[in-house]
Image 1 (tube, one colour):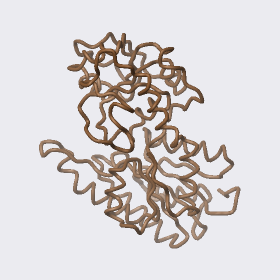
Image 2 (cartoon, rainbow, N blue to C red):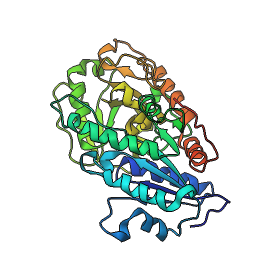
Image 3 (cartoon, rainbow, N blue to C red):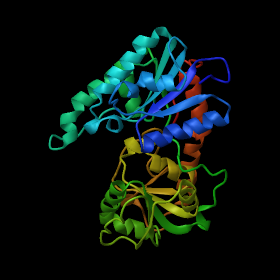
Image 4 (cartoon, one colour):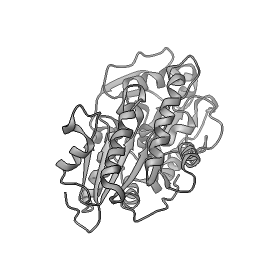
Length: 353
């Protein structure tokens, strides 16, 4: 693999399949559309010498001491059962030893580590997962993440010695150039994502169904792989569409007024579902009180909290404000910035959001 312009070979690595791999491939398509020569690898724990990261790089025509800009998309659960991917640290250490100063490593932290109460598995896995994330952050030359919460933790690990960029995730189901007005859309609500995510969203919103009715939501449209969700009582009627292609999801969101979600406000900026709603100007409704402002997202201004929805609420301004919040971190802008960070042309990635 030879770059079309002078500079290091540029390679992205992600686990797959899933949302992290989708993110990587969206960036890859954007880079290639701009004429950049790069490669995107799906990477799993090697079962032999032929599967090591060094071997996969060699198959791309990249070998030490050729300069290499390596972008690792990190989500522990993607790389290892229960997020315990110690092997990834070993693979990157081997590549670092082989390339030496010819390697520039950028780590995109889609997640850091899990946490939860003592009766949840995440509590017992938190410390080893945190160890992996710390080691990875310290190995990197530059860091990239999606929420202020992650960025604060990473800055505490590496101090000011590393470039650290913060960009909320982009929509991987399209970004329309123009959006129909709220009033021209069907007064329905979309719930999409994985089957467990959809079920959890509906279960969380079920006790607050009165708020959905106050908004005039006539039906809920469910899209995504897997079976239809079990419908809790009290919700508007649900129509299950099953799995849709990205273009079909985009058309559905652009034609529908509302989007339902259950993520905590501090995690909205790392949600691909939320990014899709934002890119399409949907009015997002979530359960819970969610105090505080996170990543520039203000409850009541950029999304609605179901318990506080009043009769006669005017949601149009909320969808417009959310679309405006999203615009500065569209895919094209993020891909261009990540290219600059990964290739060492920018050493101080700006914070966004």
